[in-house]
Image (cartoon, rainbow, N blue to C red; front, side, top):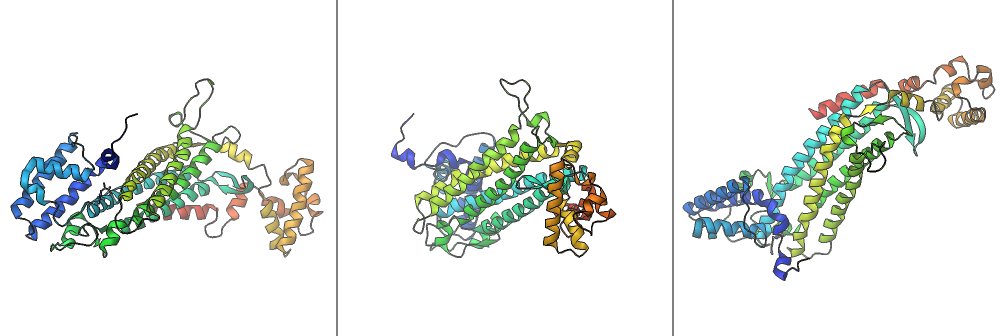
Length: 444
Ligand code: ARG
């Protein structure tokens, strides 16, 4: 293990070089504005823009910029090396403090869009799966115990709605990243007659920051973005967990295609759901990033402190992790095969229609609490005899309550129970069709 010198320790080049394209974009806008405002000669501004463009082209071709303390110093030095004196004028009216925050906002805006696009792909896969198996009924669970029958599609669409909110949260973070910090300089603003609005226009920011101290010292938007990523990951992790659980032989509700599983080094028969497990596992990284950034900020006096340099590793790691997880989840969900028979069989267990039977009595004037007690007795009676509701005779049923009649035994199939759940947002086929319509509209 190589020991770091204090100067090496201070540096951030190892992780912030990936900001290079954003840094160049910001610098080009800054230089153009400096020239137009006659803060620097127009010819120098042109030379700077040409120099930065040539660096960008070289980077695109795989050329590596020589290392320095951070990407901002490295870029300025390389510019001066290429164009000479004019390059020394670029940093007029600017500090690395407003520069780095501008880079970060550009980075976040771009990646929020990319992540949202991947989330849309996953949502489409979920809606597609729901449509493909739109009539399939499965047991719905609470406490992981059989509760009531639901449409498999309804269960899958629950995840699509979570992702709708995830995208809304990302969009919100985008709005707050869409503010230009450049022009705040180190913390106090600058005496140069900058045209901040012009820079915002060139860079595609909708607004400019109102307070120079806030602009360079705050990282709450980074927190917000990583928080949105964390919530999204918690949703992905739950979906991953269900794919894992459902593909076990105990459930065998679904099958994952070979591509998304892997074998064992010792047990020849195994196909393990590793992809879903890694998504579930990587969730911890993103939560870690959130705690990381929150801890960095807490207790920092205004304005800039070098601690803030530590915003980048958690931000980049969260972004990369979320992108990777979404990009495997979408095709994995798209390839899920449902074992319709296993789901059907599972619906026979756990007295899924018990609530329906209690509702039946309640509709005939029995107070629901009393009806609940009656059906509880029916369930216990069935359990002792090892039979299902449908196997009871009408006489047996009537012994529990006089209001039971022939129809009572006709409403208990999972399909019928599902069809009866017509409340808005419920699991009835019509409600599920409406959800698919709404989601498809939102995904357009
Ligand atoms: N590498 C630094 C960062 O990422 C750039 C800002 C340095 N500013 C300063 N005042 N030392 O935060």
